Image (cartoon, rainbow, N blue to C red; front, side, top):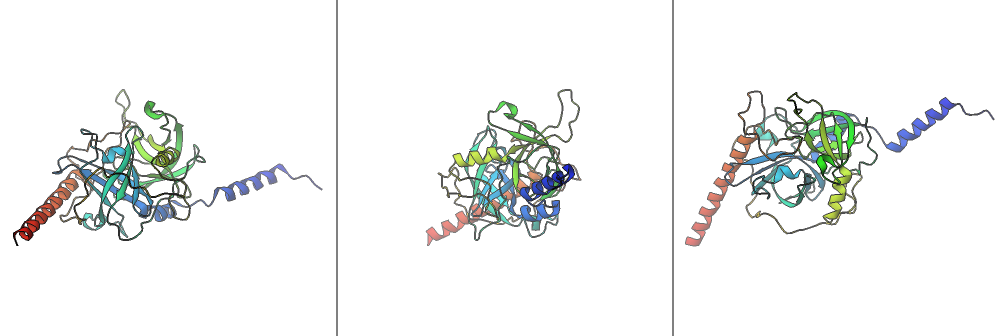
Length: 335
């Protein structure tokens, strides 16, 4: 028997590696598979004077959403925003706020970790199961692997897709023990906070958390962004009462036990759709050390989505609804 050539052995190992790792999807296929389970998250205080926004991933079909804590926690109080709205992806994103942001549902914070910058939300009043993002343990992801991000970047469109690779791995990010991250050159900007970093099979391997913008000497920094490894997120989810992550076939998280921790916010007001024509939002800041401050600067004309105007419009719509409900209760008592 003739010995097998080294070239043949290499080819066989390459074929086996490809089969073992699963099918590599195109960015378009990843987007079509995952984007319906990506949401826009917006929080604001009563009166709409302060707020924040970002991205989240639906990880359970009954409405559990994983995002960054700095998207939903008010910086001054250290507590969840009084009002949380989540916008589900429309069938087609057109760039028109009225249609793109028409699928609004209320949400409440179940639990959060500011050191890890993670928060788990529950969507209220759902009529049917939602699509989910499959969460990977991220253990197989390596430097050089292709990844994509989906989110709502400032001066860009909602449900934007950007592509790149994993650039580095960093343990104990910013001195926080156990906060392990991927560095990536995938385009991530303000508004991508809390959104998914997806591998070539469309599984979430990271939660987009921070970007580096300016060096200590003032020079701009390009293409350096950080995503919390999904293995850290899944461990944190287990500690909150959820089972092992890494669901297959659209199941999101395998072995999940439904949890119902005490509500952190009052969510008695009925669900409403946006009443005004909100300007397109520019969600919250991603910085080298994540911040919860909204962008209060005057928007440039080229900026499609303005978070401040969206928060103001949502607050006005909810104030009008609260006033109408109070008036109706008064009339009923007077009968």
